[in-house]
Amino acid sequence: MEYLEALSLIHKILRPRNYLEIGCRFGHSLALSEAPSIGVDPDYEIRVPLRAPTRLFAETSDIFFQRDVASLMGGPIDLAFIDGMHNAEFALRDFINCERTSHAEGVIVIDDVLPRDIAHASRVRNTQVWTGDVYKLVAILRKFRPDLIVETYDVEIKGICVVSGLRPGDTTLMDAYPDIEASILRGDYQPETIEEIARVVAPHPTTSLGAELVRLDELRSKRNYETGFTHPNLAKYQDGVMNYRYRDIPCLKSAVDIAIYLRLFGERRPASIIEIGSKHGGSALLFRDMCRAMDIQTQIVSIDLAPPALSASEGISFLQGDAASLEIPFRQHGLFDLPRPWLVIEDSAHSYAVCTSVLEFFEEHLCFGEYLVMEDGVLDELGLSGRYQGGPNRAIAEFLARKPQSFEIDVAYCDMFGQNMTYNPNGYLRKI
Ligand SMILES: C[S@@+](CC[C@H](N)C(=O)[O-])C[C@H]1O[C@@H](n2cnc3c(N)ncnc32)[C@H](O)[C@@H]1O
Image 1 (cartoon, rainbow, N blue to C red):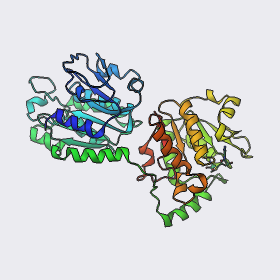
Image 2: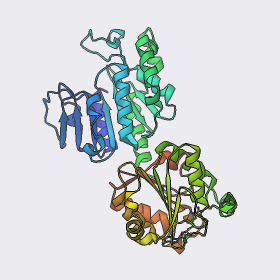
Image 3: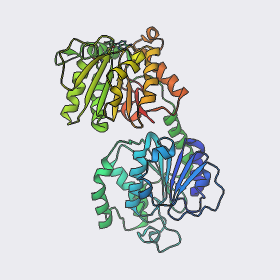
Image 4: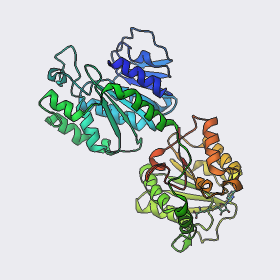
């Protein structure tokens, strides 16, 4: 299979919402896209008709990524193809930039990872066919980001790599970039023979590409709301949640979700946490102290129909308000001016109507990349969601079906301990 055939299969099976191509040159691969597309190439010279609405940028990818790419794309990148400058450090920068602008279920395809002749793999172009040393990126990704799913295929002449399981907020590669670049330039990651390169890249035959893409597409699109908790254990676990205390104040949080929140706060570093549903105030106290422990300057605003009688706590404002009419406390207390980024935690009535109203309010008021956590979809599994007209799960499912461009489910948080091993199945939502 040659690379245009492989790329065409990728478009057909994944049906991306949008497409970014780094290195579009004559437009042969760009022409395969049917989704709104962007092509980047300082020397593009499009020779074939393009099918999709496409914007072209005659600049290097490093310059391009200084732009607000998500706004240009109309949302996070869904499918990217990296075929720009054929040196490993350039392709690595392209990867870092694509991943940080993608969403968690986005896919990044990298060209030229499997040279067939050692002369093609040179850092300087001396041959007609030239893959350069992009193959080094495969070893680098596998070494520094074992969490990514990095699959390679023996596409004719140059190979391709399909990367999924993205984590847009992960900074591992960016932090290590200076060291990685130095080691590339020192000659590391550079096997002597073409056989050795193939052993490191370890490609699958292209005959398996179609089936593996279908599996990937299922992972991207099919998520049910079952949690990872099984029934006999869930009842006891729920007893623990309902009796949990922080600083001797009831704090109705699942232990797994406390661990997920710790990661979420550490990675997103919210300047404001807006909690809807304070109850006794234990969770607001816990969130404040978690942020303080990580030197995150965060203001906590916790809103409840009946705010707790907790004495005023530094860094936390307990306010009276109804989750179904958030406009009122937001105007009354100047909350629209709270510092960004915001992180919203909906933990109030849990009814379908109130959850939907909170989603609607924050769809309008959150910025790109901010988070809303919809708590307690586990009610379904506790057999209680009937009392809440379907509760958070129904609210999320219907809202996302109606407005697919509003939020995306961040599977990196939902699935941190196994698929939906959380009290908030599909409830870690990122504004897109
Ligand atoms: C599950 S408790 C919150 C638990 C707390 N966040 C914790 O983890 O410790 C739900 C709270 O939401 C409040 N509540 C219920 N309906 C509400 C609404 N429409 N607007 C605001 N708060 C509401 C209740 O008064 C109750 O205190």
